[in-house]
Image 1 (cartoon, rainbow, N blue to C red):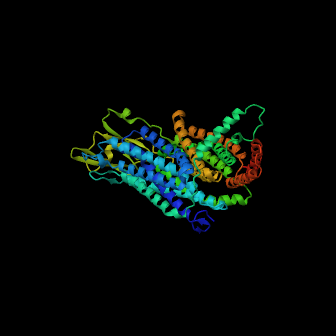
Image 2 (cartoon, helix red, strand yellow):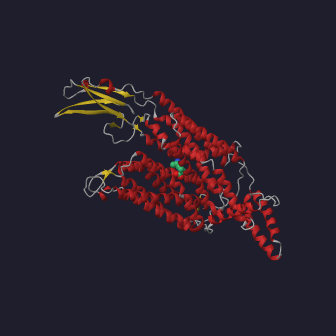
Image 3 (cartoon, rainbow, N blue to C red):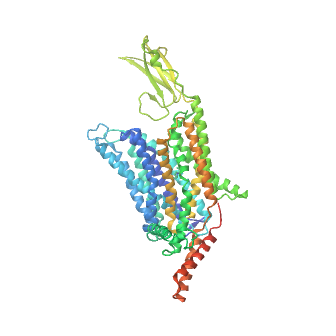
Length: 623
Ligand SMILES: C[C@H](N)C(=O)N1CCC[C@H]1C(=O)O
């Protein structure tokens, strides 16, 4: 049985349908907007690459920092339901602001196709991005935890499946939007003049966010809505502060040691709160090594995409752009999550192995390290095959009766007029006054040519014989398909690490701090992104393959530390512990009423022993 007023369908509360659809639409909105953001900065706001990249990464990091704020508001004040509603409104307003900021006609008073007041567009889009970061980050820990809340105490299996389906929805939304919004951006639109349609590319995600909100509200009557329990974060901070101060005051040897340093708060604080803080601190401590996984994971969008630009994206009927390779991740998620859940995990269980959540996360980290070893091997192959500059044609041939032009064949969208974006036969028209002739040739992906036009050129219908093409840079010969193994390993790692971590963060959190621990989990993503920024700046390793090997080694080292920490972690059932504490507190209250005047110090000691016993009983299973 679920906990809300919701009907139960196939053992699942119907209310979670609204929650997963909400997540699908929200992730569509987020990833769709993100997919075209850098291009919007570069081509609409006319920022250079460095500024565009920095603002982009700062925005992404902010999106994973704001969950802390949303979680505090939800757990201490508004509750998850109201927090999701209010912050979704903020989020939708932010998306609309982005869409409006991309309408060039608003400030194009001279109707020449370019905005006249760039300041207006910059300010509006920055306000929009800030609201989006607040909204997406703020609701993220609440939606996951709110979904988990809908399950009853004996629905552990269903709750685990829910987190897998939840992850599928994230990636379904991400996959669709990263395919659709770049197509929308490529359309031309405008009132006075036609420009690339960023307003549509931002407008559709805005509409999806409104849909997400409406769907969530429709489910309103069915949800189980846990009440917020006061300003829990303030109580937590005060309690920790008191424990530290009290420990310091009693540092002399005459005072007996206590089992845990948090037990020094017992004189002033509720034992239940102390036990809950212990649960949270234990999990947060375990999170310390985790950002390293995200440091590797998030390089899909940067280093791996740059690697793809030096590879051959010709898949026969389909020419894949380097940035499109990233869609392999959500595609693999959609395939691997069901395979893991219905085949691999049950098979491992049948073999008698206890594949606990922390073991899964450890294996996930190792798989990510393997992915980077694959990336290094591909890089070595690219380096071997690449691009020796054959010669510098203009230097050798200048002044010998030729005119020349250079042409680079790139795999990346570019506004350079001498860049061809595919490997098809290209035809050039050579003109001199009213005379012209045509020259055609085939190009390889990533190659660069210098064309020499003979001074003896005679214009006619064909000038094939009067042009000599010299290949300066060989076409990319290493195929983009070779990146698939690294995508496979990183995604398999993500399924084991991230899907498991999401559920682990929920199941190990005390009832009043579920969203806070979800935020703690998302915080590891933010720190991972910061590490990418720092390493990119600091580690100037000349060989790219060596950088990949460095990252893989770092993750293996971190993984060893994590597995040792995980070995000493004991799984808990927060609901059971809380129930025992509440029961004992009630019993003590009864006891106190019947035996007035008992020495308070004695009581504290006795309670403390009992509480430890109960806490220990409930924390049996290791890694
Ligand atoms: C798109 C990724 N495969 C993914 O699902 N995520 C990356 C960071 C966490 C997670 C998400 O919630 O978006």
